[in-house]
Amino acid sequence: MLLPGALAGTSVLQAPPDFRQRLLIGYPTLPRDRAPGKIAELAVLAGTQSPEHSEVVTYVMARLFEEGLRRAGRRLGRDSFMSALKNLNGYDTGLLPPISFGDRRWLGVAGAYVVSLDPASPTQATGVEDDN
Image (cartoon, rainbow, N blue to C red; front, side, top):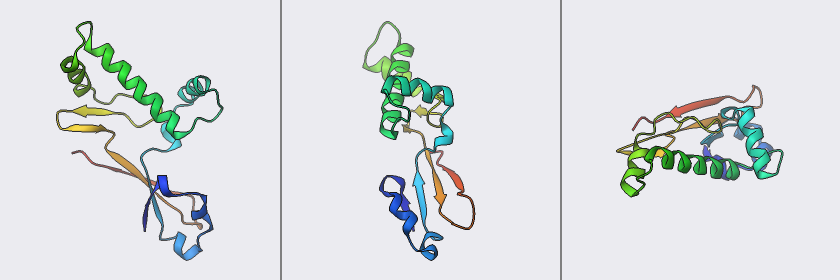
């Protein structure tokens, strides 16, 4: 069974062992994607030691917006801003996997991690990417 990470709470850990072995959880990002220095920077801004995922995503969106403005230059307009974002390829925020946009790609990060909950072995995370 595949479950979106946003819907998986700690209650999945209390599931019967036979069921847990067949449970896969999908996440858009994992803590290992976060550089310690960037988390510390965000923690200061957020006023907390451990920023929530929503705070991480909000911060990354603000950084993307800032980068788009910077690349668009002094003659800022919708077209120049959109063009700047289209040319963003492999932008590393230090908090999420590298982000890319293009003419036909408006998702930023095309992929996910699938995590298994096999109690007999350490948690394994397998990256799944979509190049489209």
